[in-house]
Image (cartoon, rainbow, N blue to C red):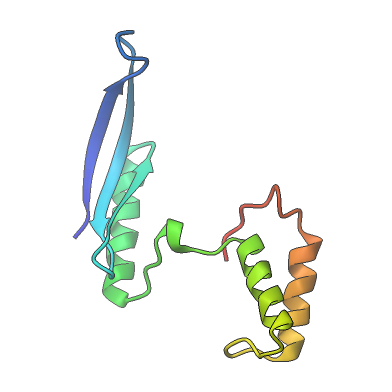
Length: 113
């Protein structure tokens, strides 16, 4: 079960100016506490609904637990170096992924697979 709450804090301390964010808190399938921040209550409620549905279906992956394009490319290079096949993959799929990852600007890319 996920919860939505409003967080408010003074920044910088002593300035009298406050910042506000809506936070979705939940426990994932691995029993790890997770939190995501949203800019509005509507967005937080929508994210809560999506998270609860994904957990119920068994398909939820936390944002921090996902691979970036750079990490996936590094994993594929390691598969190629070790001369073993990647799980579920063919040798052609490694070449395809290497083409995709090398054609992107990995430093600027934060795409999630």
